[in-house]
Length: 296
Length: 296
Image (tube, rainbow over all chains, first blue to last red; front, side):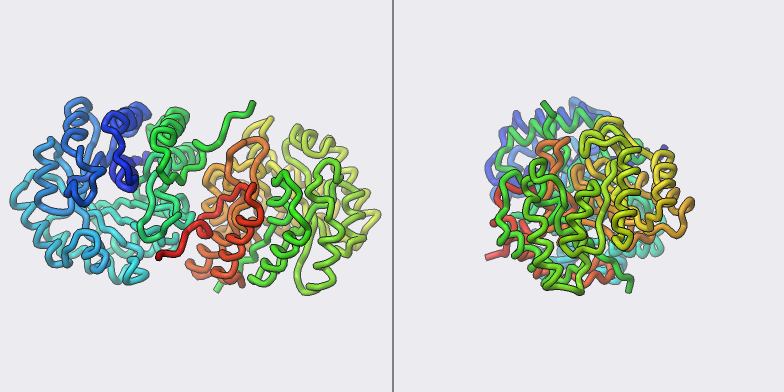
């Protein structure tokens, strides 16, 4: 039985799309529920300016609480710069996702840096925190809202300097939900051919109803860590009205039905998604399973 | 470039799940819009008892209007019995989908017949209307709400007598939305091995978020006719709250992105799905694209 690690990113990419602050107690309940459902890999928050993303203002408190309490789980935070890395390190994390967008105009819009500035910042982080494990979260891998579609010819050379700087894991992120399975396959195959010992992950949004099909395309090419969010909580500032990320519980259910082992208890996580939808009524949810009601 | 025929079944499987009668003029506008968007294959209605499904009471009028007006399009109706076949034939149709459920208890619940009775009825239809082209719509191919999961060992022997009765096309229907890609592949491969010259189609619901992934699994095994509904209009009496069928416009978009040719004009059909959602506010829609709003 093949193992797939579902890497939950709802507490970061889900919560961050909710305008009103979600109380820390609600966040704790959801993270605890995720751990209790069998999730062991989680992007728990991001260390960013609380002025830019007020939802993440409790990053240190939330992280500290869980890092101490669940030493066996694999927690990461997303960081865009040295200051974020410092916050994550001081909160007790050993790993971070360092986000850079493949589309330079998206990188400017998202974190106000050129590609060169993002790269230089990474070198500073590596120098300041040599023991911090860094995964490159490559945003807009499949398409940029300003620059359009991206392909293997864009992705492969972009990764090169990061590889040289010691990055061992790259997370291919379909930030705006424009990927299709043919593109997922061609990019993964090209990156793998060029960097055979690089660990690849995928982060797929369900914006255009291709969350499951793109993620399965990656899994069937041998990718074993895939990201999703509880309930499909998420959204996209570039596609108002669009549904969010791929839903963790839907993915867990499909994989179990297909004979994969994820360690996730599907009925339990479906109940948790129901709880979350009640606790965060303003959220945008793309999940299907938790909306199905019991028959009378 | 590989051609895929998107076989629209919204006017049958979508409309039928809407409790309140949809005015004939609205139905006509939607069917006209579908044809105008490039759809050439359509299950336009079902010929069933208007007492059982009042939504379909205009079957003859709707069918007659389009059969005369669009002789180049490929219209079918779903029929459960000889009387339905008579209605379809008299309305001018040359083809019907004859529905039988693989799960006998679902067949009883749905059309009040045993398997033997359904088979005997087919023979009567063939005798009465020898020039009527009949596709077997095999409901609950992947799972039955009463009997549970189904596999190749159930499907392959079931088809045999229908094959002997001259059926040339079988439509594998995931009526309650429980299929997964591994199962879709194993059933298609087994049926094909046994009946290499049988034409296979698939009809996949999006109940559990596997509409796209199951349909693509079938397409990548060489299936060239796949069913879906505009906007994903549909539902499932066995899963209240569940989303409907796979959305035609989402499927058309994905296939176009992957380089398949469907003949469907995606922007046009997305607009039509928006119109439909306004015209049928009580509908359950699983489509993603039509919900994305234009940015200001």
